[in-house]
Length: 273
Ligand SMILES: N[C@@H](CCC(=O)N[C@@H](CS)C(=O)NCC(=O)O)C(=O)O
Image (cartoon, rainbow, N blue to C red; front, side, top):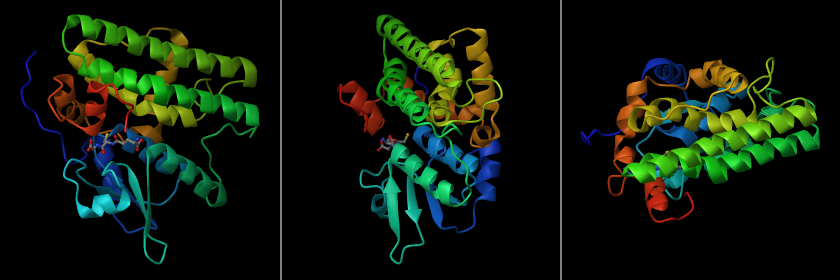
């Protein structure tokens, strides 16, 4: 495979485009978003699940406009513009935004991504899952995707595979100890860790499969969970057609110089931005 020089997409397609069109009106919250971005998809699917009104606003995070920098100091998406304040305020960082949206939903729509029991231990188990996703699974995804040469790609694939398996172990522990979290158990609903990890697993199923021949771990329970996750309406309606992801990630797969702040951090052995 050779680098064909594809450039990243600038607008959603497919089901995601329909969702964008349904969210074009001004609202108290404006989501600064980019069609191919996984942290954006986290926040976007949470907004959908929590039924919080928002306006979708597509921006190019690689052409940092003053407008983007005014809501996100590093010029990264996602960001929220909060229009109810007298002079508008803003929030960035997907995990911080998710916390904020949970608090908003608790007061308005009464929906939540956390286990309905509100048991502090069950909630802590979900935090353990998401800590693993942020600190281990996500960097492993990018290291694998950016790895050049067979040896680095084989070890990248093993590292990413092991990160998914460790997440499964955390889901199994939660099932044993508190009866399960999120969609892991049949009959469950979309949960915090599901939303946290779905964008990367989705890109593993198309981008990593295409560029690295990656195959997801096997196992009846895992496959059933992944099916429920990818088919969940709140997630599915934020997904563009595959081409958006394949084209937008070619620059990562060939590790083109200065692809993004994330790619630079991986190449320099630094933490993700
Ligand atoms: N820690 C941030 C990361 C956000 C992030 O890396 N966003 C990417 C899009 S996937 C971006 O805006 N990249 C622009 C750049 O690299 O300059 C979060 O979770 O919100």
